[in-house]
Image 1 (cartoon, rainbow, N blue to C red):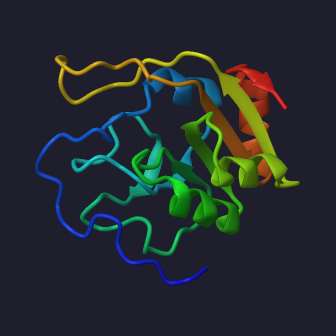
Image 2: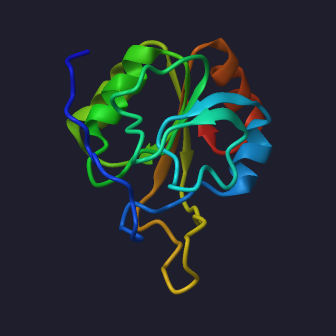
Length: 159
């Protein structure tokens, strides 16, 4: 992986358009413990069952990822996150189901498993913000533990 400059090299002080937190029911269905959430909210993941996490301030994109990761990347620029996730090869990613080169890379990868989720309501840091995703989403798994969790989760149609 090429050395990427930090996507957000400062502490997050304001709510942004990237603040869509994965709801607890997704993790309940997956029923696994992650080693690290690589794109966590500033105060830590509200729902992700994980042993460690990276925030905007600690710059998860430039950190070494380890074990089984969970990734709900900043949707303003998911490309470098998706490529790093594929390179890491172990975890679950929640990303938009959209036409893009990075989505095609996920789709064409021989070792990924995909579950299509039509509608999801995210947790948002403010009740005034719309929590409905304006697009369909996909949960992707790579690696034995993550793939098994996604397959048994019944979260969507599996490919």
